[in-house]
Length: 257
Length: 335
Image (cartoon, rainbow over all chains, first blue to last red; front, top):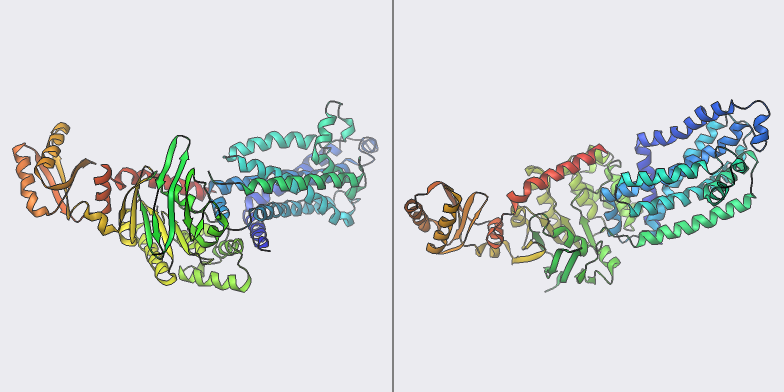
């Protein structure tokens, strides 16, 4: 059971570091709030009474948007967590982990779960704030939401960390993150219902894992979804398992040169 | 005699560059062994291979009784290491840094707490344990890193340039800790350095490394005997080609171990300086060369390096290494 030590060590490190780094803490937290307040509320005003229900699966725009924006926070936060791997590379901490006899699989898993803990926690706080705007939200389903958010977070943190292990510079990683995150974000049903998108876009939406996370979150929080919730969860579950194993396997082989 | 580390043709190539070239060294248990050489000589690469985080291109090594290629994890359990660059979490406290490290090495609970207390007291940082590391000075961070490397009772300690970038006073403190560790904990220590005074003061055995090759090995005193009893350093004023002739003349006339011209000075190793100094002045007078300054002293390891390579370790590289170090620190601070 020696691997538990490495898991706990890295989990603790991620969480502690995050709580200490105030600018990052505030930045990642404010971002989705701005989207919710300044985009969500503004955009909701564009629809007349009853009109949004016709477009957004019988929901008001804010009801439709809130679960999506919470997922967006999880998704971008998880993806960006790879950046700490590059920091560690640049400042040598990666060597400290690699030179220890600790299980590398456990240490990278601890790191991913640590980052996920933070982003999921942040998104729950966002939801609770959003509750003031969307009183129809099923608060009772928050635990279910947390499970779904964890699956999404683990998947994308896995992708982020895997990319980061291959990258040498923060700038390079940020470029890749920007190129990947924006399309995935817009093509996931966060901002508009997926059936209104033109046919050529549909396959991308369906291939985007985030789509199913947003769909599942919307189902548990406001009761509407395109797909069966079980399908959503099964897909996310399988994907997160595959990604986490790939990440762990890849990190096992990491050396410093 | 039992050995803590034995390397067998240890080699590392980066593309066409051979950073470490068939190194064979044996390090006895309980001694402080120094790898001395200029920056870029392959010291850090050697340590990284011995610490199992870099795969050798060729050859292998036995570290603490285990082959670094076949049983890397066994090796990892038995070694502690302080890397050349700072590898501390600056936003965590000293205690948190120690705690995380302890958990990585499978320590926990009360035992871990006691161990952290013991070591932080040893390096004089216990009162600072709840302060974030970013508020520590460079010397304090080094001490914390040394304490951290000792958490799991390693048999062998690697120190990669332990005093690089530290001020002279702090360096002496770090030396004291290193000597204390060896004395109290009976550990084998392998350190790399480009400071010859550090190697002379701390090390039982020194291997001089240049361009990835070991060019000399022995105790500091043994090494120094190859340059003779005294080293004479002369500064003259005349044209470069005349200096060349002067150097050749000195080489031919005197019974010296070596004569080198480097860094604007002529350096020669001799058996007895007072005897040859008049001869040097006589030669200079005949060649109409003005000697601006002449001094002699006991040889240092830097003189040994000069004899073997024609270059000096320190002046040539020291300044820009320290510069880069400072730059790196600045970047680190801005984080």
